Length: 468
Image (cartoon, rainbow, N blue to C red; front, side, top):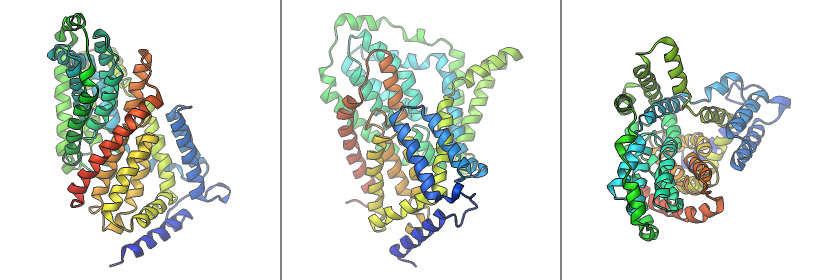
């Protein structure tokens, strides 16, 4: 058997040969330019614009993908092959289901009921809203969850005459920590699960316990530091308690249909993996079923109107961003850049799996705080895949995937641009006149994020690498 150093050397030679077009049926790069350099420059420029937020990220990703094809890094077929359609179908399906379900008023119902259950106590409300955010983020997805919960939070804090800032910060943390617990909760998990073939329950068993531990720590920390200082008047509490949760449920038949379909879809996530049914298939089929249950009684014209409305709930900007991003990353993977970086990672860690896992965990967290964790994870997936031969196959590197998932999801708490859910919270807050400044959030969130990564470090060390 070859030693780790010999395998590393072989990976390096393979990466170099790939970079010069050997081993792939790649088109010639225009003007005979080096494919590794061209693809890297395109990716870096695209990421620079995505990070700066000067241009719409979907437009940037699609332009970058187009350049990969026009300049000859990829051809049309290779570009399409690079798109992970399981992820695309999963996102579209869940967006449609949640978009239809929200019209029932169930999310407003849960939030108002929770506020009344704690009698308008601000300290308890901070904890309850965080828990609701985490649970919904695990079962739906964290971006959709904050879109539904943040407006309600702003309303409740306004009624209680409270500044919403710390409530919103808590919900950002809760959305990313809760979303970390399942396959569908956070976009990085969707990417990893689809690429590697992890099931819904794989995430529940591996990232779920860490999510629960960190949520308990987070709620306790927020309560000790801020919760005890939150106060309001009896008059404000009385006003809030006049709300009637049942009035928020505007369509109970739709709620029943939505809960039925959501249960079926989650059941499909759990049992479908062993039957060769991908999560994207379950989600898209569930979306079609829910649309059928909501339109079958109407005539053709009304059905068309309702289907258009349901599909209008899909964040098509996000979908096209993912498609462009997949093609961008496949360009640098195809030319061998990521294989070369994987070899450098192995060289740095000396072929030690535990050290490699810890490096992946911490670097994923720190870099995900700097850039959006979605493009970061999309880039890291083929890089980690390139190390599997050195460690003895796909099964051997499984701990690295959990380190990546934990690092990227928790790193999403590090800055206001680090995760899509954060950007959504900031957008709603600014529209309500409560702007969350980048530096203000960074000073508070980054040290807290590093604390959660320290806890995750202990978790992975004991669960996957045999303790310290």
